[in-house]
Image 1: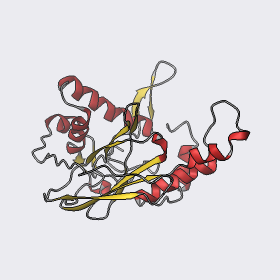
Image 2: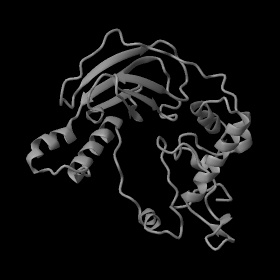
Image 3: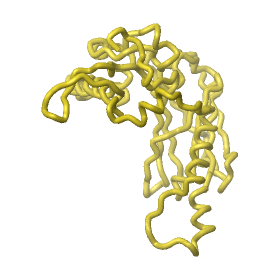
Image 4: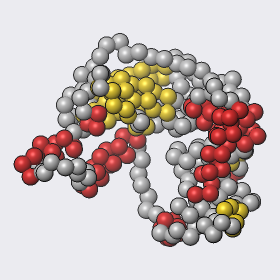
Length: 264
């Protein structure tokens, strides 16, 4: 809001929402070719996207990861946002443009030898990676290359020395060597020390493939949606590896999700 408070319908999360942006009573275009005041996350998101576009026009050589970090580094700290967003701040275009990151360092670790992921074993395998440098973490990026014929079967997660777990995401198919996966926490380990043992876990969770095998004689040759129970099972496994529990929505959040008048 104009006073930097969070509306009741705001998204929030100390590990899931990076920053806040203006989204209450925003003067914007309307469907009748005019202008009006409107509220919702649909109006907050374009503010951040606009900052990113301005920065990309000014710094065309800066990659997306660094661009995002500059936006996050440039937020204005708002006391009421602490504990509700990763940065505890609100987007600031000028600060993002002038953000400097002398703290940025890269630590690379190559596994000593390939490991075999046991087929259809949710427990999977683990690899310990020791990081000797005691750095205050602002962001963590992980690149993993997996030689596996079924990308959707493999679940990967990483746990910090402090015990914070995150599921690796953004998988991409690679026809030659299985697939490669790049994961960026977007400050998910923010504030922790990098020193100590990091644990990388890989497991084969062939729920969809198992369903197809068991029901092959009943399935027509067409595209199918993933069955709800399997979809929920996959989601539960992913959330479990991240150490996340889902609370029930408040009545205000339910009302907001059901309303097109407030935005989406």
